[in-house]
Image (cartoon, rainbow, N blue to C red; front, side):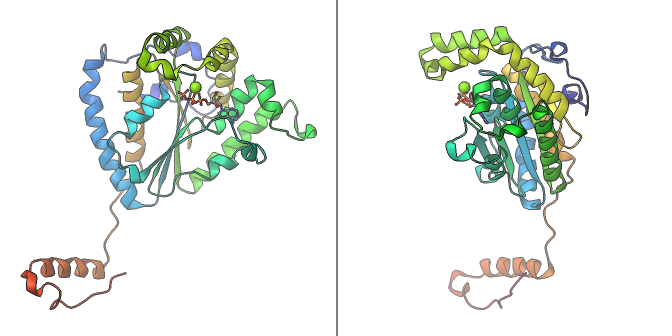
Length: 301
Ligand code: ATP
Ligand code: MG
């Protein structure tokens, strides 16, 4: 599969109309992609082990979407099989009072992935140019000094986000950003599904309907944000999301391709470490009664 056609090139003016949310590439049905999905997950597990052992790069995956686009299940899919000790997921909700008293990157900067790890942001600082741009009252709650609130404010935020991501990239955090592109009609069906299916009732949130009413404003905000913040180091991918299985296939492949460019290696062992391994092997092969005694000790590192 060619994931390049979903990648937004730097300074490309995105036209969301030209991305079909129901796109399924060369697959017609989910069953045809099942083998690929399974194999990709295995590759991902192996690559994560190497990322962790190599311990130089960190990977940050950012997910943004309208409600019911399938962020949660896409994240769960990509995570399945990964070592929980090398992976962190953070969901960003409405900011707390404490968070509002800081700059908007503060709460995300605290939970960035460490070297060797994969960090997943379920929503992110991009909300600062999306929900905050669409809702004036949400913006007002940020209590910015009036002299800083100019017509340039969104452009300024794009610049700052780009600078922040460039800083992370230059320090070894690889960033990939996914916009799960669901159609308004598919969202309607999924909302109805949440109302009809008792097992999904809990997912229904009346507030989601209010956001849906602002659909066009959101699409404008997404268009502007994605066009202004897709860079070489931190590209956006516009992922067709009307078919959840296809969205998962695209995301998994992008993550694999990203990790494969990093030339990950298991760390080389020092001489003393190798000697220690040989000693340990010899000791474990002694009869139990002698195990604790005869092999000389080596200190490695
Ligand atoms: P789900 O509904 O599938 O459980 P969700 O990501 O929609 O997941 P919610 O708790 O429903 O989670 O919604 C989080 C809300 O917080 C969203 O409406 C989002 O726009 C809002 N939010 C996130 N970041 C900010 C922010 N920086 N400022 C204001 N609102 C924000
Ligand atoms: Mg929600």
